[in-house]
Image (cartoon, rainbow, N blue to C red; front, side, top):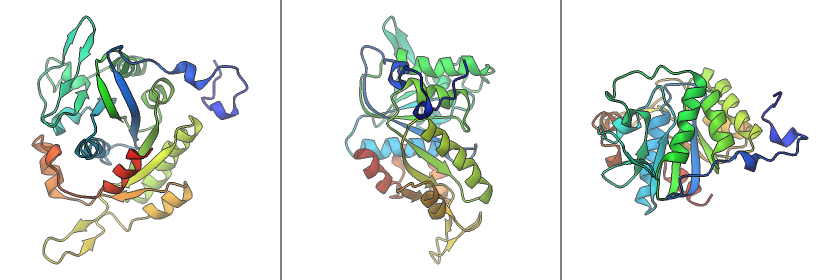
Length: 269
């Protein structure tokens, strides 16, 4: 009661580590990276999928915990439509064609188009169960696709999972700058480092003249990163091939080096 969730300014004897939950006894997850955004529709799930694929291409074992319970889209991007299985030991995640392990509420529903009409505490509890009850096995990098904002689920993830850092996803609109600040400040309150920032839909490259056009206005991502002392900046263009890959469940086949620098940063965290 009365907790501000800012451990750095707290005089209580409890430690942040005491809130961390253990994974399933058959799981060993080495690094946990949260993918966050201040608002919806900026491509957070796209970045989550691309980062998992990028690290898998580097030879690491990857996994995605889809914490966006009411708007899950990770299974669709990987072309997975079957239901997850389970045993007395725990939930068995689905595995993509290239080997990335996935757990999402859509993998547990009778019909993947069924809405999830749950209140906040139930949603947060489900995310926690995905962490504690799933048999993840050996995972080098787990990416957690979080819902937008600073509500129950991000707070649960920051407090209960051993998050090693976050990646912030944004878009060029001026309004987004203020909202990004909220997400970054929440992470700092929870003593979670910001690894990098990704600006999605940053520009459109004409296939004929190769000129770059700022459809949503000129980018201010560098200034935003400087303001919050974020040292890794990546830009993803508006690319029909990426959209097509997601729609066809073939995100593992994407072709582009936009996140290579960020992947190097994650590798060395």
